[in-house]
Length: 295
Image (cartoon, rainbow, N blue to C red):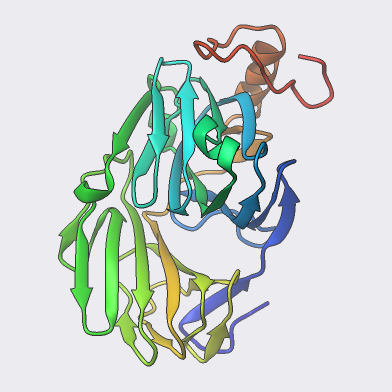
């Protein structure tokens, strides 16, 4: 639907998607808004409670043409990939995996939490790569929570996950100009959104905020109009994610876990996964078959 305020171009409502063990709320891509800056996929995971013996169990699967970012508010996930990385991610950490020409990874609840039962809450996002970077070598970098800048303003606590905002500069290396900020707002707090960003969206995790004459409840994303300025007014204690960055040139195609400016390249990736030409994840021999195939 269109926003009523001049500063808001569109308000997006997520669709529920099942990941088997739990559901996610997927806001991007939307039929009316594929991307916000380089963000092309945005999943709100949980909050989910797992009983003993259960948990996240995403088997090895491939990616091309994008970077993935996992960011948790609660819980833990074990990441393993075909580059040989085996990394536990906890709240406030940043796992940034660049797929480039191709990478395979799995995401699972750590065994210790699986035995005891656990709680999970976080965001999984994909960042589309610039066309000149779509075929770069895959890479993985883990940034511990204490390396992510924290900015305290009047009524607001901010973590600059990626980019440069509110006087904080994130150490996270990105392939294009990217903005990603976690904003915790006290009741009645006002936060001015960053200016000079090509495209910017606001996603409400918890609470409620007013922006440009619109009230956003949890699970809603407001996308600002081009060159608009706006502020967030929290009507209660709220958590929001600010996301966006430089507008990427050209079309992007999405099929399953693949993103590319070329349909032909996606067809090649399909064949490569079905025929076993991607590298495997050391110590994790399972895999998710290509949709419509047994491999």
